[in-house]
Length: 94
Image (cartoon, rainbow, N blue to C red; front, top):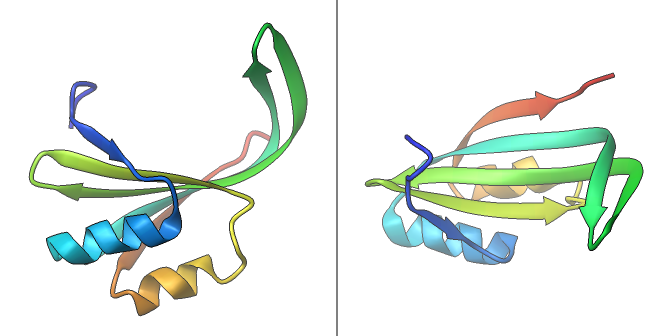
């Protein structure tokens, strides 16, 4: 995968699951962030606690991507019930 790999950004979990099912995908990456971070917005920056999950799956040269802010506690179970094997990556800087 390179920086020029086409990416399909999906707006929510249900769209991500539907895209994976429609393509017959059986694996996904779950990248979790749960830490203080700086966020830019307009001309400013805010520092605060960030809790989000990025879901990624790969299909024939295209990355499927979905970012979920404040993910539900049962997210892993939901993904596994949808037939996805999961690889988890956790970002922590503290």
